[in-house]
Length: 112
Image (tube, rainbow, N blue to C red; front, side):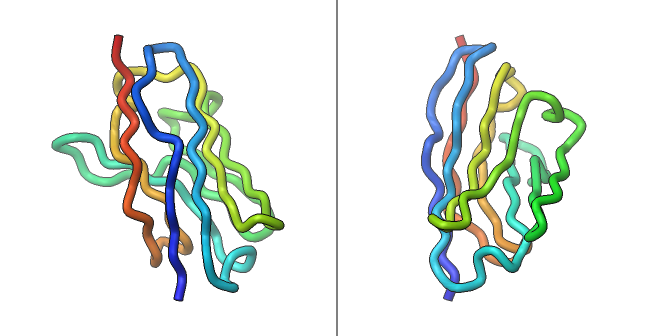
């Protein structure tokens, strides 16, 4: 059974930074791709960033150059470092394993 738990969301001013963390339980970590997705109010869920088991990363065009996804396999944790945040980054952010297992989400609000 895989469980994912996100943390690190909150309120930040435009231009600020946040780091999201996702702690994964279960033995599947490290052999499946991990990802961060988000759903803004009134919009569909979208991929933000993914990282393969080999460390290959992929980013949405809207966050490339500002966000960084990384993993710490020894702790079964995946991170999303978010810099230069914009109001349009406001959303609930979800951690996912293989786009099959999902966390409960953590709210990120970018506002002055």
